[in-house]
Image (cartoon, rainbow, N blue to C red; front, side):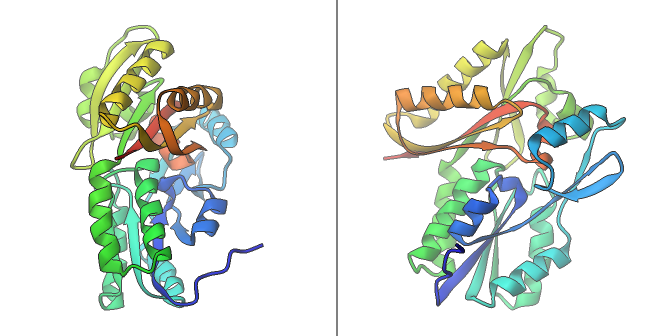
Length: 287
């Protein structure tokens, strides 16, 4: 059964597929998702068409690393036109402008709507972005205006943090998005790299660990630093072809903190193109 759309929405929420929000959750929260695209072995597909297993199988067998591309301006125009059929305005929240041209495409499309579309750079990705989208959706349900939601988003952006653990740097290196993380390149056997997204929305290195166990221990230590004295928080644990590992991290989080929300999710094809197999945790401390 399709959730009923509120009769008079102050604003609609739009995001892109790098938020890693499932179609079911997007439907429930009344969020419109504009997909990026992945080109693999000569075929271009919208993000989300391939299952994670299908994507990694095709990536392993393809002669070249997949490539990704941002949505077109036209795709955003169509999304905004749909949204404005049921809402007075739009809040459009997207992957960091330091990692993709998606925000710029959204802003170009927004120019056609005479101030009715408000574009927000999350300066994050995956559920570092999705928690901000969820906050905007909550603002919409509460009847807040678009400007009020944008103010809340600015605060949320400062509070939501993301850590990503990589089994290998090869995908980031080949995709040209390694930046400062290159300082962590090494030849240590089974080296696990952890990185975050800094205040400017760019990848920044955190550490390197020998083996998965140490990498996860480092992840938990980092989360403790972000939580500070807070005992409650919202968490999202993502993975690239490593669900069992994600579940172990989620259980460790439950044992240590009061998780008011805890999502375990699969990273999409666009994210996995650049990370390879991985884990990640987005945290939003409360109180």
